[in-house]
Length: 215
Image 1 (tube, rainbow, N blue to C red):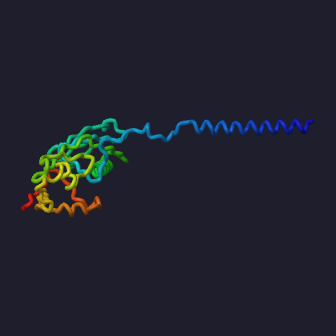
Image 2: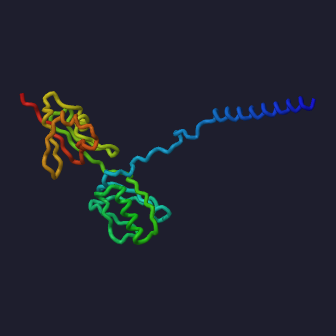
């Protein structure tokens, strides 16, 4: 009798443990995942770019972590491109540098003069507006703004002008870049360029002129 009682007690204990384990598994399956991306913060409007250079009329926001007098300082880049920064004796040239380059330079200068190990947060709040023009035999000639978040090549610029006019000479696409000799491209050659590193990207004040076919 005692053996039979021990058998049933042991069986009940095993079933109880199994039931708890199953209950835990079901609870785990029903719980929402903690890795869902719905709660993530949105990406900033502008990221530190490796190739987007600071220019006059840009506005920066500067913070040195842990320094209350250097939190979220707005800096408008003047025409000279030089900025005055607290605790740095001489003006610092900002124009022509990428945000990452300027961040590293400020950290180096502050480390030499003031802080032991400065951590600089640098954000470009607003880029000055930059434009290109597409003229000649396109459907909608005009001036177009260069977006800050992406590069625009010659083909994309022509597309923004709604493509070639019926009388366009697609072998005569002239790029006029201030301070440099004009260059002429053929559209069929531009199509063949698939490597992003080899595309001809436009710069502010570039002008594209599409010639006319001669019949």
